[in-house]
Length: 287
Image (tube, rainbow, N blue to C red; front, side):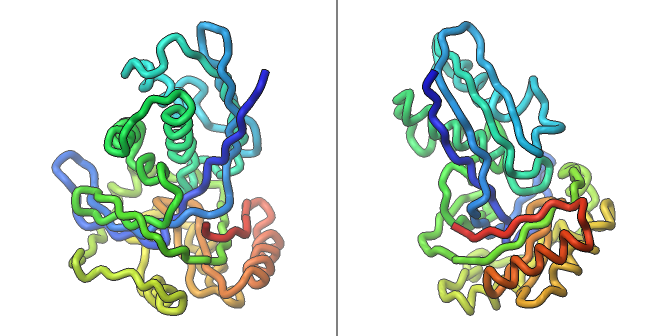
């Protein structure tokens, strides 16, 4: 059996501002998003059977539903829309991205598979149709369809892709807490007032860092209230040599630090492992 292996990359919310709660219960958010070279590895092959075979391995396979994960949701959706008639697949995902961390692993898996099926099965779906299908799976899935720095405007959840590479040195720390996004949004009392037209993202590296240091994640306070250990992680990362700033990504519990260079990020990861041996951490770069 011949497998194709594809990489499913991790997303990072460099900033996240909650603008307002909508009537449908969702929220308008403004977020600057990057992707880094941490990825799940998806192996896929078409099989001559009447059902799919979906499996997971790796440290973070625990707590992934066997009956209702994003891989199965993509397969079911494409069959419902008559795109995968009488075709079945064996799909294995090596989970290197922590589950329930705010790093978008499940959403990335779904987006990666949508792109794969659209290309290899020659579905000929337009960008608009692909985005529409992605939204059926989850809010973050359309974002992960294109692996480029992305600005989520908040106004109608419009996605703007940026051509500039940020070249950021990242330390990601996962304190092995699965945060409830629903509970955090419900607990959140912080809302930002932003003029979308004046929200300029600098292209110069030094100015970008200055800009990001002034930003924040509006969900951080609610996350810390519900999961106090997150504050300790953020503070510890921020105290390390060469760290420009630290905060949660998404709704947590993963915390990020942006460092002046890779060496400082590696040294900080060694300190994390020494002080918090149970926590998972990784040094990465934005791509």
